[in-house]
Length: 281
Length: 165
Image 1 (tube, one colour):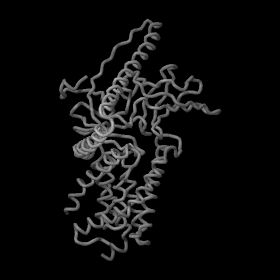
Image 2 (cartoon, rainbow over the protein chains, first blue to last red):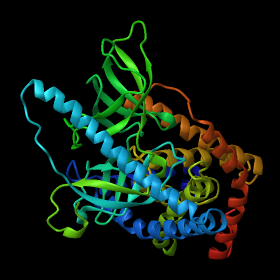
Image 3 (cartoon, rainbow over the protein chains, first blue to last red):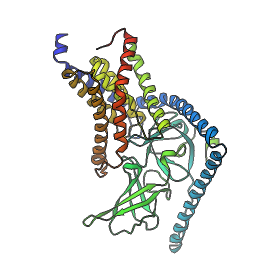
Image 4 (cartoon, helix red, strand yellow):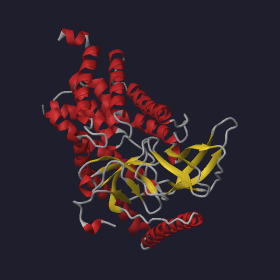
Protein backbone atom coordinates (compact mmCIF):
# COMPACT_ATOMS: atom_id res chain seq x y z
CA UNK A 1 0.00 0.00 0.00
CA UNK A 2 2.87 2.37 0.84
CA UNK A 3 4.41 1.62 -2.54
CA UNK A 4 1.10 2.43 -4.27
CA UNK A 5 0.76 5.72 -2.43
CA UNK A 6 4.38 6.66 -3.07
CA UNK A 7 4.25 5.98 -6.79
CA UNK A 8 0.62 6.89 -7.40
CA UNK A 9 1.22 8.80 -10.65
CA UNK A 10 3.41 6.07 -12.15
CA UNK A 11 0.95 3.38 -11.11
CA UNK A 12 -2.01 5.31 -12.59
CA UNK A 13 -0.08 5.79 -15.84
CA UNK A 14 0.71 2.07 -15.95
CA UNK A 15 -2.90 1.06 -15.23
CA UNK A 16 -4.25 3.42 -17.90
CA UNK A 17 -1.66 2.23 -20.41
CA UNK A 18 -2.62 -1.40 -19.73
CA UNK A 19 -6.37 -0.77 -20.01
CA UNK A 20 -5.83 1.38 -23.10
CA UNK A 21 -3.59 -1.20 -24.78
CA UNK A 22 -6.27 -3.85 -24.24
CA UNK A 23 -8.93 -1.56 -25.69
CA UNK A 24 -6.79 -0.60 -28.68
CA UNK A 25 -6.05 -4.28 -29.35
CA UNK A 26 -9.73 -5.22 -29.38
CA UNK A 27 -10.94 -2.09 -31.17
CA UNK A 28 -8.58 -2.30 -34.15
CA UNK A 29 -10.19 -3.70 -37.31
CA UNK A 30 -8.62 -6.83 -38.81
CA UNK A 31 -9.23 -5.61 -42.36
CA UNK A 32 -8.76 -2.08 -43.72
CA UNK A 33 -12.39 -1.40 -44.67
CA UNK A 34 -13.91 -3.01 -41.65
CA UNK A 35 -15.26 -1.73 -38.35
CA UNK A 36 -13.77 -3.53 -35.35
CA UNK A 37 -15.96 -5.98 -33.47
CA UNK A 38 -15.93 -3.86 -30.30
CA UNK A 39 -17.05 -0.75 -32.19
CA UNK A 40 -19.77 -2.73 -33.93
CA UNK A 41 -21.04 -3.94 -30.56
CA UNK A 42 -21.13 -0.38 -29.17
CA UNK A 43 -22.86 1.01 -32.29
CA UNK A 44 -25.35 -1.84 -32.33
CA UNK A 45 -26.15 -1.64 -28.61
CA UNK A 46 -26.52 2.13 -28.73
CA UNK A 47 -28.88 2.21 -31.71
CA UNK A 48 -32.06 1.03 -29.85
CA UNK A 49 -31.47 3.65 -27.15
CA UNK A 50 -30.84 6.30 -29.80
CA UNK A 51 -34.04 5.30 -31.60
CA UNK A 52 -36.10 5.42 -28.42
CA UNK A 53 -34.66 8.71 -27.12
CA UNK A 54 -34.93 10.37 -30.54
CA UNK A 55 -38.51 9.14 -31.00
CA UNK A 56 -39.57 10.31 -27.54
CA UNK A 57 -37.97 13.75 -27.77
CA UNK A 58 -39.07 14.21 -31.37
CA UNK A 59 -42.68 13.32 -30.61
CA UNK A 60 -42.67 15.75 -27.67
CA UNK A 61 -41.27 18.48 -29.89
CA UNK A 62 -43.66 17.66 -32.72
CA UNK A 63 -46.63 17.75 -30.36
CA UNK A 64 -45.58 21.17 -29.19
CA UNK A 65 -45.01 22.50 -32.69
CA UNK A 66 -48.04 20.91 -34.30
CA UNK A 67 -50.86 21.37 -31.87
CA UNK A 68 -49.92 24.48 -30.01
CA UNK A 69 -48.57 26.70 -32.76
CA UNK A 70 -49.03 25.79 -36.37
CA UNK A 71 -51.84 23.29 -36.84
CA UNK A 72 -52.08 22.45 -40.53
CA UNK A 73 -49.59 25.05 -41.71
CA UNK A 74 -46.62 23.10 -40.47
CA UNK A 75 -47.75 19.97 -42.33
CA UNK A 76 -48.34 21.89 -45.56
CA UNK A 77 -45.01 23.67 -45.21
CA UNK A 78 -43.24 20.36 -44.72
CA UNK A 79 -44.94 18.88 -47.78
CA UNK A 80 -44.05 21.88 -49.93
CA UNK A 81 -40.45 21.88 -48.74
CA UNK A 82 -40.19 18.20 -49.59
CA UNK A 83 -41.61 18.89 -53.02
CA UNK A 84 -39.24 21.83 -53.59
CA UNK A 85 -36.28 19.65 -52.58
CA UNK A 86 -37.32 16.92 -54.99
CA UNK A 87 -37.82 19.40 -57.84
CA UNK A 88 -34.46 21.04 -57.10
CA UNK A 89 -32.76 17.68 -57.18
CA UNK A 90 -34.47 16.88 -60.48
CA UNK A 91 -33.54 20.27 -61.93
CA UNK A 92 -29.94 19.84 -60.82
CA UNK A 93 -29.79 16.45 -62.50
CA UNK A 94 -31.33 17.86 -65.67
CA UNK A 95 -28.79 20.70 -65.76
CA UNK A 96 -25.95 18.27 -65.36
CA UNK A 97 -27.34 16.02 -68.08
CA UNK A 98 -27.75 19.01 -70.45
CA UNK A 99 -24.19 20.24 -69.91
CA UNK A 100 -22.82 16.77 -70.30
CA UNK A 101 -24.99 16.08 -73.32
CA UNK A 102 -23.74 19.20 -75.13
CA UNK A 103 -20.14 18.34 -74.38
CA UNK A 104 -20.51 14.75 -75.46
CA UNK A 105 -22.41 15.67 -78.61
CA UNK A 106 -19.31 17.42 -79.89
CA UNK A 107 -17.38 14.22 -79.34
CA UNK A 108 -20.20 12.09 -80.77
CA UNK A 109 -20.19 10.12 -77.56
CA UNK A 110 -23.00 8.64 -75.63
CA UNK A 111 -23.69 8.89 -71.96
CA UNK A 112 -24.14 5.54 -70.39
CA UNK A 113 -27.01 5.62 -67.92
CA UNK A 114 -25.96 4.22 -64.59
CA UNK A 115 -28.43 3.06 -61.99
CA UNK A 116 -27.70 2.54 -58.31
CA UNK A 117 -29.25 0.50 -55.55
CA UNK A 118 -30.13 2.60 -52.53
CA UNK A 119 -31.64 2.04 -49.10
CA UNK A 120 -33.56 4.62 -47.15
CA UNK A 121 -32.28 5.30 -43.65
CA UNK A 122 -33.41 7.42 -40.76
CA UNK A 123 -31.07 9.60 -38.69
CA UNK A 124 -31.34 8.30 -35.13
CA UNK A 125 -28.70 10.40 -33.43
CA UNK A 126 -26.75 13.53 -34.25
CA UNK A 127 -24.56 15.85 -32.26
CA UNK A 128 -24.76 19.13 -34.15
CA UNK A 129 -23.02 21.20 -31.49
CA UNK A 130 -19.89 19.04 -31.64
CA UNK A 131 -16.83 20.14 -33.60
CA UNK A 132 -16.84 16.69 -35.19
CA UNK A 133 -19.58 16.32 -37.82
CA UNK A 134 -21.25 12.92 -37.85
CA UNK A 135 -24.57 11.20 -37.23
CA UNK A 136 -25.88 7.68 -36.77
CA UNK A 137 -28.42 6.04 -39.11
CA UNK A 138 -30.63 3.00 -38.57
CA UNK A 139 -29.29 0.86 -41.43
CA UNK A 140 -26.20 -1.34 -41.29
CA UNK A 141 -24.30 -4.15 -42.98
CA UNK A 142 -27.42 -6.35 -42.88
CA UNK A 143 -29.01 -3.88 -45.32
CA UNK A 144 -25.99 -3.69 -47.62
CA UNK A 145 -24.36 -0.60 -46.08
CA UNK A 146 -20.57 -0.74 -45.97
CA UNK A 147 -17.71 1.58 -45.05
CA UNK A 148 -17.42 4.31 -47.67
CA UNK A 149 -21.04 4.01 -48.89
CA UNK A 150 -22.22 7.45 -50.14
CA UNK A 151 -25.05 9.05 -48.17
CA UNK A 152 -27.42 11.43 -49.98
CA UNK A 153 -30.43 13.59 -49.28
CA UNK A 154 -32.87 14.99 -51.83
CA UNK A 155 -30.79 18.19 -52.03
CA UNK A 156 -27.42 16.55 -52.53
CA UNK A 157 -24.56 14.65 -50.92
CA UNK A 158 -24.58 14.49 -47.12
CA UNK A 159 -21.51 12.34 -46.39
CA UNK A 160 -20.17 8.81 -46.39
CA UNK A 161 -20.32 5.86 -44.00
CA UNK A 162 -17.28 5.62 -41.71
CA UNK A 163 -18.29 2.87 -39.25
CA UNK A 164 -20.90 0.17 -39.69
CA UNK A 165 -22.47 -2.42 -37.43
CA UNK A 166 -25.21 -4.92 -38.29
CA UNK A 167 -28.17 -2.54 -37.98
CA UNK A 168 -26.63 0.93 -37.63
CA UNK A 169 -23.93 3.03 -39.23
CA UNK A 170 -22.03 6.21 -38.42
CA UNK A 171 -21.91 8.76 -41.22
CA UNK A 172 -19.00 11.17 -41.68
CA UNK A 173 -20.55 14.41 -42.95
CA UNK A 174 -19.10 16.39 -45.84
CA UNK A 175 -18.46 19.40 -43.60
CA UNK A 176 -16.20 17.44 -41.22
CA UNK A 177 -12.51 18.25 -41.69
CA UNK A 178 -11.77 14.54 -42.04
CA UNK A 179 -14.04 14.11 -45.08
CA UNK A 180 -12.54 14.48 -48.57
CA UNK A 181 -14.46 14.03 -51.83
CA UNK A 182 -13.19 14.34 -55.39
CA UNK A 183 -15.25 17.11 -57.01
CA UNK A 184 -15.43 19.64 -59.83
CA UNK A 185 -17.16 22.93 -60.58
CA UNK A 186 -20.02 22.18 -62.94
CA UNK A 187 -19.80 25.41 -64.96
CA UNK A 188 -16.04 25.42 -65.59
CA UNK A 189 -15.06 21.76 -64.94
CA UNK A 190 -12.34 22.97 -62.52
CA UNK A 191 -11.41 19.98 -60.36
CA UNK A 192 -10.45 19.81 -56.69
CA UNK A 193 -10.92 17.98 -53.42
CA UNK A 194 -13.87 19.06 -51.30
CA UNK A 195 -13.05 19.05 -47.62
CA UNK A 196 -14.97 20.09 -44.51
CA UNK A 197 -14.25 23.38 -42.86
CA UNK A 198 -15.45 24.97 -39.65
CA UNK A 199 -18.75 26.87 -39.40
CA UNK A 200 -20.45 24.08 -41.38
CA UNK A 201 -18.93 25.01 -44.74
CA UNK A 202 -16.45 23.22 -46.99
CA UNK A 203 -13.36 24.15 -48.97
CA UNK A 204 -12.60 23.05 -52.51
CA UNK A 205 -8.85 22.49 -52.34
CA UNK A 206 -6.18 22.24 -55.00
CA UNK A 207 -8.04 24.30 -57.64
CA UNK A 208 -5.29 25.98 -59.74
CA UNK A 209 -5.22 29.79 -59.80
CA UNK A 210 -5.66 29.75 -63.56
CA UNK A 211 -9.11 28.07 -63.31
CA UNK A 212 -12.13 30.34 -63.48
CA UNK A 213 -14.41 29.84 -60.47
CA UNK A 214 -17.14 32.33 -59.53
CA UNK A 215 -19.46 32.77 -56.58
CA UNK A 216 -22.72 30.93 -57.21
CA UNK A 217 -21.11 28.12 -59.24
CA UNK A 218 -22.22 24.60 -58.37
CA UNK A 219 -19.79 21.97 -57.09
CA UNK A 220 -20.62 18.35 -57.94
CA UNK A 221 -19.02 14.95 -57.41
CA UNK A 222 -16.55 13.88 -60.07
CA UNK A 223 -17.43 10.18 -59.81
CA UNK A 224 -13.74 9.30 -60.00
CA UNK A 225 -13.10 8.16 -56.44
CA UNK A 226 -14.90 7.19 -53.27
CA UNK A 227 -17.88 5.41 -54.82
CA UNK A 228 -19.91 8.57 -55.40
CA UNK A 229 -21.96 8.76 -58.61
CA UNK A 230 -20.94 11.52 -60.98
CA UNK A 231 -22.81 14.84 -60.95
CA UNK A 232 -24.34 14.72 -57.45
CA UNK A 233 -24.66 18.21 -56.02
CA UNK A 234 -22.25 18.92 -53.19
CA UNK A 235 -22.61 22.65 -52.72
CA UNK A 236 -22.49 26.19 -54.03
CA UNK A 237 -19.40 28.41 -54.21
CA UNK A 238 -19.84 31.28 -51.74
CA UNK A 239 -16.36 32.81 -51.78
CA UNK A 240 -13.25 32.69 -53.98
CA UNK A 241 -9.93 34.07 -52.76
CA UNK A 242 -6.86 34.21 -55.00
CA UNK A 243 -3.71 35.02 -53.00
CA UNK A 244 -0.99 36.91 -54.92
CA UNK A 245 1.67 34.21 -54.53
CA UNK A 246 -0.50 31.12 -54.15
CA UNK A 247 -0.52 28.18 -56.58
CA UNK A 248 -4.12 27.34 -55.72
CA UNK A 249 -7.17 29.47 -55.06
CA UNK A 250 -9.19 29.24 -51.86
CA UNK A 251 -12.74 28.23 -52.83
CA UNK A 252 -15.31 28.22 -50.02
CA UNK A 253 -18.37 26.04 -50.64
CA UNK A 254 -21.69 25.89 -48.78
CA UNK A 255 -23.21 22.37 -48.82
CA UNK A 256 -26.46 22.12 -50.80
CA UNK A 257 -27.97 19.68 -48.34
CA UNK A 258 -29.21 21.25 -45.15
CA UNK A 259 -27.07 18.87 -43.13
CA UNK A 260 -28.22 20.10 -39.74
CA UNK A 261 -31.86 19.31 -40.52
CA UNK A 262 -31.57 16.03 -42.41
CA UNK A 263 -33.92 13.38 -41.02
CA UNK A 264 -33.96 10.73 -43.75
CA UNK A 265 -31.18 9.83 -46.15
CA UNK A 266 -30.45 7.52 -49.05
CA UNK A 267 -27.43 5.24 -48.84
CA UNK A 268 -25.96 3.88 -52.07
CA UNK A 269 -25.26 0.23 -51.44
CA UNK A 270 -23.60 -2.70 -53.14
CA UNK A 271 -23.96 -6.41 -52.53
CA UNK A 272 -27.55 -6.39 -51.28
CA UNK A 273 -28.33 -10.07 -51.73
CA UNK A 274 -29.70 -10.40 -48.20
CA UNK A 275 -31.90 -7.33 -48.29
CA UNK A 276 -35.61 -7.21 -49.14
CA UNK A 277 -36.76 -5.85 -52.49
CA UNK A 278 -39.32 -3.47 -50.98
CA UNK A 279 -36.69 -1.09 -49.62
CA UNK A 280 -34.67 -0.90 -52.83
CA UNK A 281 -35.13 2.13 -55.03
CA UNK B 1 -17.22 -6.09 -9.60
CA UNK B 2 -20.72 -4.69 -10.08
CA UNK B 3 -19.16 -1.31 -10.88
CA UNK B 4 -17.19 -2.75 -13.81
CA UNK B 5 -20.21 -4.68 -15.11
CA UNK B 6 -22.47 -1.64 -14.99
CA UNK B 7 -19.91 0.79 -16.37
CA UNK B 8 -20.23 -0.01 -20.13
CA UNK B 9 -24.08 0.14 -20.29
CA UNK B 10 -24.10 3.24 -18.07
CA UNK B 11 -21.55 4.92 -20.34
CA UNK B 12 -23.59 4.01 -23.39
CA UNK B 13 -26.85 5.39 -21.99
CA UNK B 14 -25.12 8.51 -20.65
CA UNK B 15 -23.46 9.32 -24.00
CA UNK B 16 -26.62 8.63 -26.02
CA UNK B 17 -28.72 10.71 -23.65
CA UNK B 18 -26.30 13.63 -23.54
CA UNK B 19 -26.06 13.83 -27.34
CA UNK B 20 -29.72 13.19 -28.13
CA UNK B 21 -31.16 15.38 -25.39
CA UNK B 22 -28.84 18.33 -26.04
CA UNK B 23 -29.40 18.11 -29.79
CA UNK B 24 -33.18 17.91 -29.51
CA UNK B 25 -33.61 20.60 -26.91
CA UNK B 26 -31.10 23.11 -28.21
CA UNK B 27 -31.27 22.24 -31.94
CA UNK B 28 -27.51 21.88 -32.10
CA UNK B 29 -26.58 25.09 -30.38
CA UNK B 30 -25.59 23.81 -26.95
CA UNK B 31 -23.67 20.73 -25.86
CA UNK B 32 -23.42 19.58 -22.28
CA UNK B 33 -20.61 17.02 -22.18
CA UNK B 34 -21.58 15.11 -19.08
CA UNK B 35 -18.96 12.46 -19.84
CA UNK B 36 -16.24 15.10 -19.46
CA UNK B 37 -17.61 16.09 -16.04
CA UNK B 38 -17.51 12.42 -15.05
CA UNK B 39 -13.89 12.16 -16.17
CA UNK B 40 -13.05 15.22 -14.06
CA UNK B 41 -14.89 13.70 -11.11
CA UNK B 42 -12.92 10.49 -11.58
CA UNK B 43 -9.68 12.47 -11.69
CA UNK B 44 -10.46 14.34 -8.49
CA UNK B 45 -12.21 11.68 -6.42
CA UNK B 46 -12.12 8.06 -7.64
CA UNK B 47 -9.50 5.38 -7.06
CA UNK B 48 -6.94 4.76 -9.81
CA UNK B 49 -8.29 1.52 -11.27
CA UNK B 50 -11.96 2.54 -11.18
CA UNK B 51 -11.15 5.94 -12.62
CA UNK B 52 -8.98 4.47 -15.39
CA UNK B 53 -11.74 2.07 -16.40
CA UNK B 54 -14.32 4.87 -16.40
CA UNK B 55 -12.12 7.19 -18.46
CA UNK B 56 -11.28 4.58 -21.10
CA UNK B 57 -14.86 3.26 -21.41
CA UNK B 58 -16.41 6.71 -21.73
CA UNK B 59 -13.71 7.81 -24.19
CA UNK B 60 -14.22 4.72 -26.30
CA UNK B 61 -18.02 5.08 -26.39
CA UNK B 62 -17.71 8.76 -27.33
CA UNK B 63 -15.22 7.87 -30.08
CA UNK B 64 -17.52 5.20 -31.48
CA UNK B 65 -20.73 7.22 -31.41
CA UNK B 66 -19.68 10.78 -32.16
CA UNK B 67 -15.94 11.08 -32.94
CA UNK B 68 -14.46 11.20 -36.41
CA UNK B 69 -10.77 11.07 -35.43
CA UNK B 70 -9.85 7.59 -34.11
CA UNK B 71 -9.22 7.47 -30.34
CA UNK B 72 -9.51 11.26 -29.98
CA UNK B 73 -11.88 11.22 -27.00
CA UNK B 74 -10.11 8.29 -25.33
CA UNK B 75 -6.75 10.06 -25.41
CA UNK B 76 -8.20 13.45 -24.51
CA UNK B 77 -10.08 12.03 -21.52
CA UNK B 78 -6.91 10.31 -20.32
CA UNK B 79 -5.05 13.63 -20.49
CA UNK B 80 -7.86 15.38 -18.59
CA UNK B 81 -7.91 12.62 -15.99
CA UNK B 82 -4.13 12.78 -15.45
CA UNK B 83 -4.23 16.58 -15.21
CA UNK B 84 -7.11 16.45 -12.72
CA UNK B 85 -5.28 13.85 -10.67
CA UNK B 86 -2.08 15.92 -10.63
CA UNK B 87 -4.04 19.01 -9.57
CA UNK B 88 -5.97 17.10 -6.88
CA UNK B 89 -2.69 16.35 -5.05
CA UNK B 90 -2.02 20.06 -4.66
CA UNK B 91 -5.38 21.80 -4.32
CA UNK B 92 -8.63 21.02 -2.57
CA UNK B 93 -10.63 19.34 -5.31
CA UNK B 94 -13.96 20.07 -3.71
CA UNK B 95 -13.83 23.84 -4.14
CA UNK B 96 -16.43 25.08 -6.60
CA UNK B 97 -14.03 27.52 -8.21
CA UNK B 98 -11.45 24.78 -8.86
CA UNK B 99 -13.88 22.39 -10.55
CA UNK B 100 -15.59 25.17 -12.50
CA UNK B 101 -12.22 26.39 -13.81
CA UNK B 102 -11.21 22.82 -14.66
CA UNK B 103 -14.42 22.22 -16.65
CA UNK B 104 -14.12 25.57 -18.43
CA UNK B 105 -10.50 24.93 -19.42
CA UNK B 106 -11.24 21.35 -20.51
CA UNK B 107 -13.92 22.37 -23.04
CA UNK B 108 -11.73 25.15 -24.42
CA UNK B 109 -8.73 22.80 -24.47
CA UNK B 110 -10.73 20.17 -26.34
CA UNK B 111 -11.72 22.71 -29.00
CA UNK B 112 -8.12 23.92 -29.30
CA UNK B 113 -6.88 20.34 -29.80
CA UNK B 114 -9.54 19.71 -32.49
CA UNK B 115 -8.61 22.94 -34.30
CA UNK B 116 -4.93 21.97 -34.14
CA UNK B 117 -5.71 18.45 -35.36
CA UNK B 118 -7.75 19.81 -38.28
CA UNK B 119 -4.68 21.84 -39.23
CA UNK B 120 -2.14 19.04 -38.90
CA UNK B 121 -4.22 16.09 -40.09
CA UNK B 122 -6.44 17.68 -42.70
CA UNK B 123 -4.60 20.86 -43.65
CA UNK B 124 -7.58 23.09 -42.82
CA UNK B 125 -6.28 26.63 -42.12
CA UNK B 126 -5.83 27.32 -38.41
CA UNK B 127 -8.58 29.67 -37.29
CA UNK B 128 -11.12 29.93 -34.54
CA UNK B 129 -14.11 30.79 -36.82
CA UNK B 130 -17.41 29.68 -35.39
CA UNK B 131 -15.99 28.91 -32.00
CA UNK B 132 -18.57 31.02 -30.13
CA UNK B 133 -20.56 27.85 -29.47
CA UNK B 134 -17.53 26.36 -27.72
CA UNK B 135 -17.28 29.37 -25.43
CA UNK B 136 -21.00 29.12 -24.55
CA UNK B 137 -20.59 25.40 -23.93
CA UNK B 138 -17.56 25.89 -21.70
CA UNK B 139 -19.40 28.52 -19.61
CA UNK B 140 -22.49 26.31 -19.36
CA UNK B 141 -20.46 23.26 -18.36
CA UNK B 142 -18.44 25.29 -15.84
CA UNK B 143 -21.63 26.61 -14.22
CA UNK B 144 -23.27 23.19 -13.99
CA UNK B 145 -20.21 21.13 -12.97
CA UNK B 146 -20.56 21.76 -9.18
CA UNK B 147 -24.17 20.52 -9.39
CA UNK B 148 -23.11 17.39 -11.24
CA UNK B 149 -20.27 16.79 -8.75
CA UNK B 150 -22.80 16.96 -5.91
CA UNK B 151 -25.07 14.55 -7.80
CA UNK B 152 -22.24 12.08 -8.50
CA UNK B 153 -21.23 12.21 -4.84
CA UNK B 154 -24.80 11.40 -3.79
CA UNK B 155 -24.88 8.47 -6.23
CA UNK B 156 -21.53 7.24 -4.91
CA UNK B 157 -22.76 7.44 -1.31
CA UNK B 158 -25.99 5.66 -2.25
CA UNK B 159 -24.06 2.89 -4.02
CA UNK B 160 -21.24 2.34 -1.53
CA UNK B 161 -22.53 3.85 1.69
CA UNK B 162 -19.66 6.34 1.71
CA UNK B 163 -18.00 8.83 -0.59
CA UNK B 164 -14.41 8.38 -1.74
CA UNK B 165 -13.66 11.85 -0.39
